[in-house]
Image 1 (tube, rainbow, N blue to C red):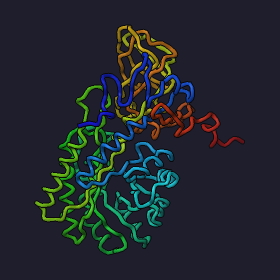
Image 2 (image 1 turned 90 degrees about the vertical axis):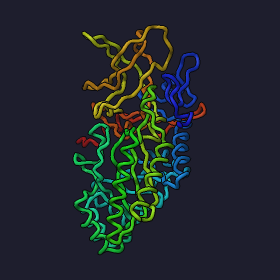
Image 3 (image 1 turned 180 degrees about the vertical axis):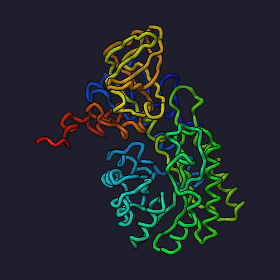
Image 4 (image 1 turned 90 degrees about the horizontal axis):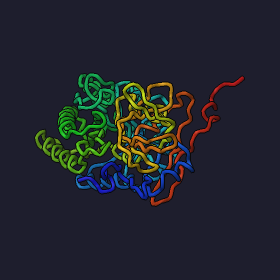
Length: 431
């Protein structure tokens, strides 16, 4: 089952409601949000965020699973402060994310350092104990930490070869991806670990991709992880922890076909892990999952102002005041976002339009059914944008990054200020 606060209600995304025709997000009118913070703006609904966190925690507690939020999806100091008040752990994958987490008050023992090519500074942070554990992605990282001489709890990220049915650009296992240690290198990794006892081997990690809706892909990954665990156990390296990754699919529109039952999935993973441990005759490791998008995406709504509407030979375009600079996902891997008219309702018949941004690209944000009388000055809400929008935003065309706003129970506050033009040019050398 999906928590009520995370469900879609007709065309309305989780947390959205209409009163007198106007859309409310987090209990706040969109025109009020636009007036205070400008557009484009990313609005995070506090109730939806609470609900998604609770859904994962409640489903995981039944099986004694650990849950870590993958910070790469979206991370700000104020968000970390909110997360630190929950039971969630936190994954960081750069020095910037680590410093953000530290300033937000996340304790080191609740953090895991990821990254497929860690810098010297990032490895030094691991050696200094600024994170509770480190996930090693390649043999060079392992050798570097071995040379550091410090006691470092770690897991090995392995490539299980499971190719999930998702866009090729967000697959993170299989021959076509850069991530993880290949099976051919397992013995070498085990040799390094065996000869450097200060490297505290905790277990294995694997992540196979993003926006996955098929339970079978996750179970195939678990199956192969346990096969690898048995091999490491035979080398006197027992696996105490297995992190089976994230990538849990998020419902991006009213169509329930893209709905993933988190509790049902974790039940299936728990059953598979138990069976594999018994079959292989190894102790059952502690299981961890690391949702990022699945926690933050449903809480996010991007609010845009319509700049113009134009009809070409066979298509109608609605151009808004954002675009690829604040949401590159549709351009990168055809991500879908549901869009609705937010500032009012209309009795006009709907028509299919292309919602696009104002950059010097064909920056198609989404395709939507909008009333025929949509016009300049209207507000559009583009849904499920909490993940990989602000975190991937750029200053293309020297546009400034939008404000990020937290809305809950009719109140609202800033999480990140809108950039000014001076912010955009601050690093230019002007002599």
